[in-house]
Length: 207
Image (cartoon, rainbow, N blue to C red; front, side, top):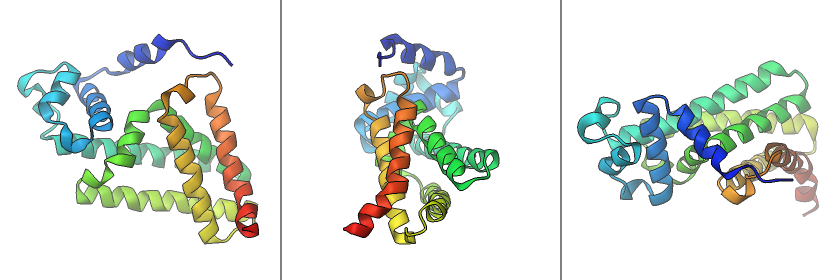
């Protein structure tokens, strides 16, 4: 399987940053991921976005506002993918596949955003953090319910572990650049995540 051309991702990123708001979000996500939220200041974000002086504050009041916007964005994207998967499919297996594919799609499209949600969530405002965790729990409950329908021997507790394992796998791979440089990687990740979700219950039961 050939690797994707190295310049493609950079060109695509430049093409989609059509506004000051989007450019600042991308710069914030990149810097928060690389250095950690506490180590980044607003001047660095502005410099990373090519925006000098007070221009940053026309879009965001603070560094905190940028982080909160990033967490909200991922939360909304995850919710939208969940809705799409449930609307498009009726059978449990199709729904679970759609949910996994949506999670993979976002994780590959926005690895900086995903990384920030994993490592910097504790720095988000209480309201944003609590809302994200609440919605995440609701989304994962849908996955657990579908696993229970497909593999009835799976308990809720086991389903919760399987979902956590599958999501961690997806997000870890998406954040590992050299593993995502190949055409067809989304299908491979989705297939492996589905295997975790639907066959891991047997391993748990045998343990």
